[in-house]
Image (cartoon, rainbow, N blue to C red; front, side, top):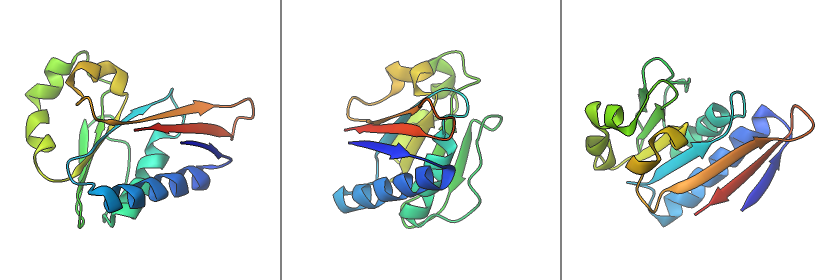
Length: 141
């Protein structure tokens, strides 16, 4: 599926719609691999995703924490792999434990840990368009 976002609010709404679709299919245990450069809108997408999953708490980028957890009917585990040098570091923080906790794992900078992602991960590519505020969001499941 391909979407065009003209603002951060649009990107959040697209994330929220994605969460509602996931919930209908049984979102628990889903890994969402997010791809896109700095400032592409990955965290905005996750904010919408959290809202759509019914999670509470202010969603912020977990760049320095590596993972933020948001409780809800379906919990959200928001990872940022920007500071990791390999998937080995991801396993050291308990990646496998998160996969079996019954939540959704949203992983920013997924290309850094591609070998740790399940084959059936939902892949979301967010790209800048010519207009600085416009993004193309491609969801490939």
